[in-house]
Length: 362
Image (tube, rainbow, N blue to C red):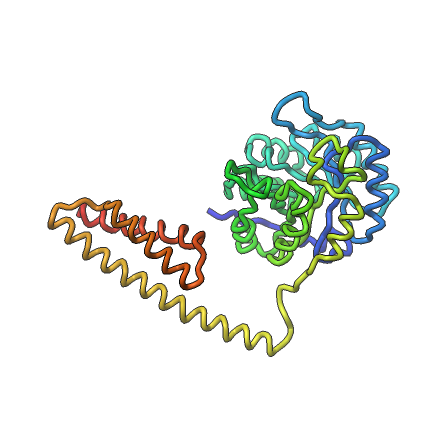
């Protein structure tokens, strides 16, 4: 069941909000000098609304840099005092929430390792009951859409209405140029369900490599996301965490200058008329596609009955292999991608098996 989220529009909690909202700052707060120097350079860009820095760093194994802790909140408080930027920090438990509120942090966010744990999310939600503060929620490390929704629902139920989602990609063992697979269908589905929910893209964690950040950032903008969270460090090469995916303030400025921000709609009557024409074409073609699929399944029913009459098994692997090979050749000739066909063909096959199985057991 889809939760009914009560959301305050982002323009009401980010003063002067203009898409894209840019959140920037180091992966980790390492020293007062590093934090303030980075913040001062970022502010010069004049496009960054929110300064971020990790205070507590959840590491897979002990012994790695796990953040400076509470002392770092004092440095971020100075950023707020010395610059015009809002501040945001990741929280993973009730104690983190308590300390962030004590030091006047403006926005909190839940990391991917926290979102995956409903117990941790509920603990944070309980600590925020009755508190009016914006909270951003990263998707869980594994591609479980319900965990992402569930975390936001838990926060909403205790009164957090200034909500945003952060899309940071998903852990995968398959070989990829990205650190985390983008799996864009998840933020697209979220935006479809909740058009008023701001979605911030985290190209740093998706890319894992600063050279890919412009590519991911542009893709996020083309999908009408509300903003970007880009890890920015005064000297990325010596950063204590995630050095490869952090950019300098100068590189951040270059990325933002090159970014093309498109509008979700156009006021041009000619554009709307042409777009309506194309959409009507799609509607007509979709109707034909569904008619053809229905006809195909009608033939599948005939095959199922014939197999049953002749005591033949439903699954015939050689036939399926032949179908896949022929359809892929056909798809290539028609300009369709193998990736697309490899997703849609198994779905059609599964439905065919289901229908035949139903006939066999009738």
